[in-house]
Image (tube, rainbow, N blue to C red):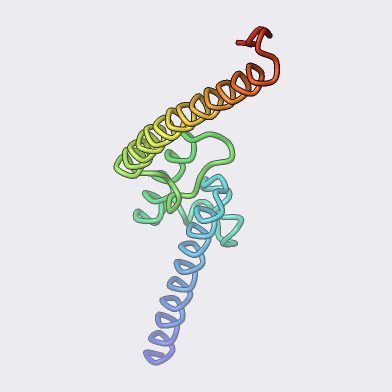
Length: 140
């Protein structure tokens, strides 16, 4: 009988570890895809009972953390691995400000070039008009 007892305990441990692995995989998959992370969705995805999930402190804590994170985000929720950090948002803002500065400078440079070309063109038109028709008005 002791040999049978050891085999039963061993089988229960394997089943427990397999169930944990399925639950953890379901959590990762739901978070990766941006799906709502709730006890119900994890239980359905992992094919385990919700009561079992509640009985696992680490898995329960992770579900609660991810559930809280997805409830505060816009629909559809953004997976945790893709959410922006404060530093990355600050860097993006700084890059946008730099790009705006560059475009403003380029715009000013192009306006100056355009003004220069229009001025030269006006001068050339005025010169040609006065040569061919000395009494004509110069359009400005």
